[in-house]
Image (cartoon, rainbow, N blue to C red; front, side):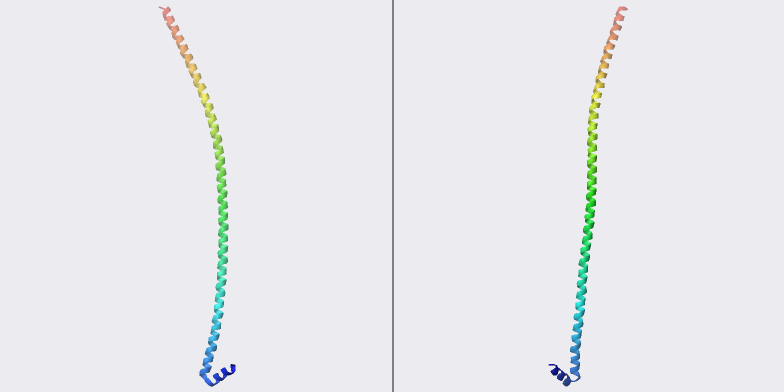
Length: 142
């Protein structure tokens, strides 16, 4: 086959040599384009891999930040709930103390009221005695 190709080239003259050059040039160009395409696909694959890796690390950082924020939020919620429970206990104790104080004050006021009523009754009785004595003196003096 090589011999027949050489015979065609020698018998064809300059046009055959030019045609052979064009075929050779086309093959070289195809090899070069294929090489460039392989490099481009390789760099594209590398870029996709880097982008996927960056996306994964970004998602991981986002998830970590979200977890930290959730933990801080839960800590704050627990702290607020604990403070609320403590305040509620204090309010319950204060309310109990107020009810007890109110009951004691009520009893005390009732005692004072009873004492005042008794005192008033004594004063009325005394006033009646004084009036009776005045009448008796007035009747004796007549």
